[in-house]
Image (cartoon, rainbow, N blue to C red; front, side, top):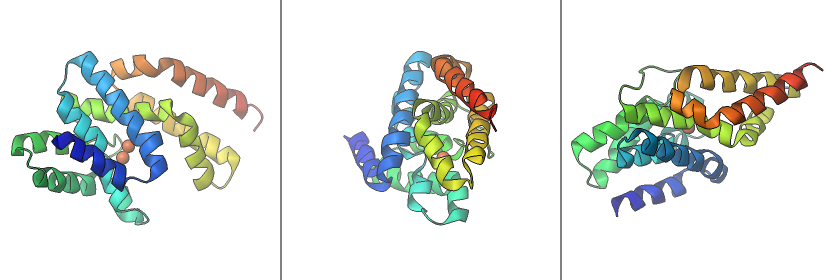
Length: 187
Ligand SMILES: [Fe+2]
Ligand SMILES: [Fe+2]
């Protein structure tokens, strides 16, 4: 099946920890939301596998990584064309890839794109410790990492998630915010 080819490409292109701790939870949460909202599961699963492909293929190139939604849109179109998907289907998937960021324009317009963008945020709640690990390696102090990860989690919660997504990870959001608030009293 063509979708197996997409899964294979994802497994090959993402680095190991990105694949396990980000891409897999995005796919899982996207499919849960797709069921809940009766959206197009094939568009959603393929878009979830490919949403960060632009980041995977421009590793160590900060500018390209920063524009990875645009790089990813082009790469997704290329991959899906090669696999023989129909133009209309490709358009639906590439719209999800282009609009998954939340912080960057354009905004998601379809329910499928809103689901992929929400699932991208949900993954950060699901594998929060991996997100925190990332902040620890990029920020110059432990305190800055805690403050940075708190801002990211709140941005995701406030700007990227549809209500159904929030409902699904509310317990994790509350737990994360509680632990961060508790830690910050000693800063
Ligand atoms: Fe991304
Ligand atoms: Fe992502």
